[in-house]
Every structure is written in C-alpha cells, then in structure tokens.
Length: 153
Figure 1 (cartoon, rainbow, N blue to C red):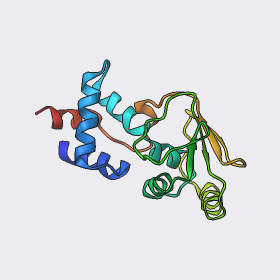
Figure 2 (cartoon, rainbow, N blue to C red):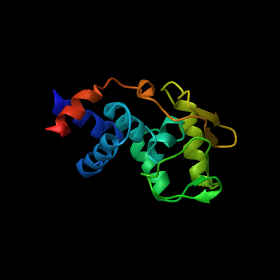
Figure 3 (cartoon, one colour):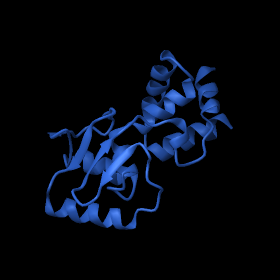
Figure 4 (cartoon, rainbow, N blue to C red):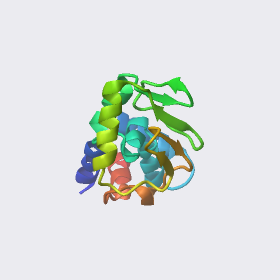
C-alpha cells in the first residue's frame, strides 16, 4: 500500500525517485505534518502550477513549456520545472505564436477544477499565485501518511 501511494505521487507529478526522496527529507525537517508539507512542496513546482492553471494539457507538456523557456515569473524567464513558486508571484507565458496556440487550446479544453489558490487571466495568458496550496487542494486521492511511512522505514 505504501509503495502504491508513493508511485501514485511519482506518476502524477512526474518526479523521479531521487527528487521525491529529497522532497520528503525537506518536508520532514520542516514544521507541521510531514505528509501535508510533502504535498505542498509537490504542488508548488512550476511545471505543476502551469498545469493546474490550465496552460498545458498535461504535466509533462507543462514541463516542456517550462524547459523551453516559454514561462516568465515576475517578468523574468524561468526554465527550471522544479522551481518553487511563492505566494504573490505572477507567472505569464512568453508571447510566441506556437506557444500561444497551445495555451489557448489547453485553456479551452481544460477539465480539472480551477485551483482556488491561483488567479488565472486566460486572455493575457498569465496567472497569480494568491496563496500557498494545501493538501486538500490536491485533485486526486492520495494518502500522504503512507508515503511518509514508506520513507521513514
């Protein structure tokens, strides 16, 4: 059960085992519940945030947009998918023909409920991170405690 929950996190967020283990260590050192902190760290990844805002159809597509330099944070180009967004940051897509079509198509067909911690402006292809995500905002069922138990052994 623990392995299944860990693999569910890895698959849904597109992270490697090494990345997830590093995030677990960071979450366990912090204050509060380790499982909730781990989910928050995963939700704050730039590739995940671009996907949650509806600017890409999948997390791997969002990762590609970020890696190819199509994303700006507060006016500066960022090409690191694991970049952690902070509350108050404004993320926008660079204005390029191919990218605009992908983002517009993705926004038109996006099916997940909008994240309540993001303010999305689809017309201008930008969004603002209004608050930090919580474990309750994860759009799929996962038992983070089982993942913590997996790594704690």
